[in-house]
Length: 357
Ligand SMILES: Nc1ncnc2c1ncn2[C@@H]1O[C@H](COP(=O)(O)OP(=O)(O)OP(=O)(O)O)[C@@H](O)[C@H]1O
Ligand code: SF4
Ligand SMILES: [Mg+2]
Figure 1 (cartoon, helix red, strand yellow):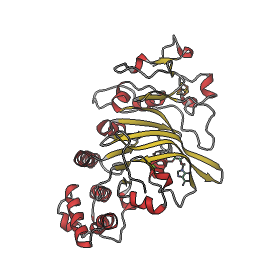
Figure 2 (cartoon, protein in one colour; figure 1 turned 60 degrees about the vertical axis):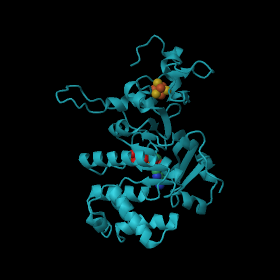
Figure 3 (cartoon, protein in one colour; figure 1 turned 120 degrees about the vertical axis):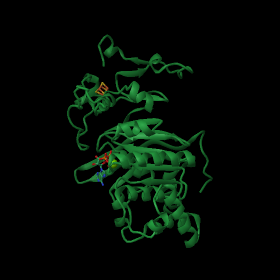
């Protein structure tokens, strides 16, 4: 394997990734040409409704789709400059769980019920770092301590069923971080937990990230989690990124109609707020019957004729891109430093003069 080296500050770069499933009813393009990059120590959120391709994207990165009918049809997944899609299975095993690790949504189904949690944390340490059993066990106890497990020495000898949901998720984090990965993928890491434990786990992930310099992909339905943890966010819809922007921009100045719809459906925290909660009209189209043109067009209040015919490109400046006919870059020159997004993303002629939002 060639030496792994970061390109600029990018630890991971995903470029034009396409992953499809062969099914009895035809091909499902679960991930349909996504591109993003993550900086060292940065956090990228991926948000979108169920079925938008968030998990398939992360499973593609780790090549964990074996045993399904999935096929990565196109694209590159460059980790430290090396395209993971060119690696052999043995080479990929050295990366997975070591340099790139993942925390899954449901810890009970991801933990082995027949092994003590100490052994499950020690396993990757033995496999990837060549430590002996005693050394790995001690490192496992240290990891449990690091993730805030009370009585770590005693807990290490227990089985998953003896722990609460929050503790099991801490164990998952300990396993994922055992080898000090460069990238940690968190797929809905707190969905199964109650709000207080959820907050504790997110605080823990952020603290460990600061201490270890890990880059994180945070997959979630919850925009609150994005606001708490992410620098950048990719909004996905039907296998494509429809907006890629700084998290701050998403909350203060969302561009894509779907992003706006997601934000408008967040409940207000103000107790006496009488604001009616909006929902996005309609449902996500079936992956077998994606509409021609923009996949959001059947639900979009701003859809025009062209939206039903042509899929817009993801367009804009590197730090705020939108896939929508409303926005287009009018200049081929790169935006000047210090210029605002509004200074070069123009509303196309088609929508000029209309009240948009
Ligand atoms: N094993 C499979 N066989 C066929 N299609 C699949 C398979 N796994 C996923 N898909 C399809 O891929 C698409 C994307 O699924 P994915 O699990 O990535 O969605 P998601 O965004 O993670 O959703 P959720 O928020 O519910 O976790 C969906 O349309 C789904 O039906
Ligand atoms: S391209 Fe058209 S249909 Fe799609 S989000 Fe933009 S305005 Fe709506
Ligand atoms: Mg998922």
